[in-house]
Image (cartoon, rainbow, N blue to C red; front, side, top):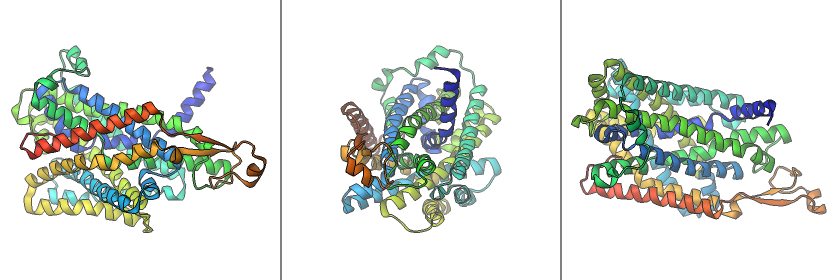
Length: 471
């Protein structure tokens, strides 16, 4: 392969950077911090393997989302509306909306706590200020106008917040000392401590079982659409009811690559960094075993330095803001996809955000800091219960040949998804391309679903029985 070909591939890949970064935000939100800190504080680096495996699971399911959105031109919510019975569609919509609210609670709490630490803003006002991230969406993100310039600008905005989060945790890593590097890298290998220690198992299952946030599935299947639309608009001058085969071929593999690289570089790094910092600085400190976000800040300030605490607070602010923006976007995707809402996009986004802020506001008024922490834990329990319900259709759709088959008539399409009259008459070039999952991928994705669902159910049952479970 010549240098010019390599440069061309790199340039094309660069044009796809963005969706995977935005999806990775769902895997590093403030709701996951306490679990990783607890794992590092109690078992040092031995639970890094759970983070690595959780990322593998995330990659598999998110690749299915990319495939579904690319091949059908519809996101997961729209496919549910189109292919499922109406009553079942409404049931799944209810749980998807509940998942959006529960997810957004974690982002609101994380941002509010960060504002309290950094700027001494009371939690009550911090909760109200989190509505500002909606303004960023209202101004920048308008994919319905088919403007890739606006989409790219918004992707860069979110990427900036994500980059700031990554930089914060890089700085945290520079603040600690890891004398035995081999022990750290060994943590990414399976450890028998998971089977010997009940608490290690609970924390590992918490990392594995709650790794895939339900809203990320709807988001991942939707973010691929702007580039498909851009390709067809440039080539055909209009959009059909589904993407052309040439658009699918042009985007699919690059979308896979960008997603996988983003998840491994960003999500795996951030979650690993949290655990490593806790392992190096808080190992053996019992007060870190069940610390909330404010307690983690206090512990890092005391055991490392005040600067380390401030860096963590900034990381929480950046990740909370980026995750809040992404979650609000997912709320719009869910509402419009399941119900085909005709409301203006800004109304949908604002309503979605307010639904999450109002419970936080009321809890802060009546229960204070402790109530905020309890609500964060409750939100993670809700997400664990909902994930199996909202993720099952993804595997069904991508394994269904009828849904995942598209017509390839050598670009002789009328952009309505069907061969044009001349193609139908002469019979030339009309072929069907089946993008459905193969037997192996169907088995692997089903196994991942079974494992994650079983772990979540086990954690919830253990939690209800009084065990110290980390979600």
